[in-house]
Image 1: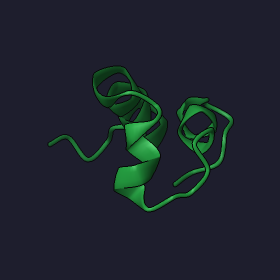
Image 2: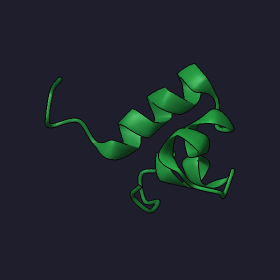
Image 3: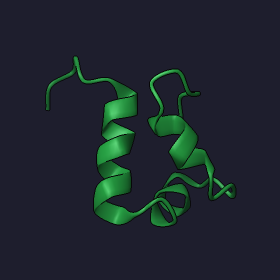
Image 4: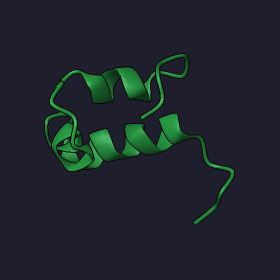
Length: 46
């Protein structure tokens, strides 16, 4: 894996592949909307 990838890009890919409902479950987050905010370039980081 390329270490120069941005975390926001990775979350966007996860959201696209798994859906923004499954991603927070895998991360341990209880907030279903958090992965959508993680995917934004200026959003928080997981």
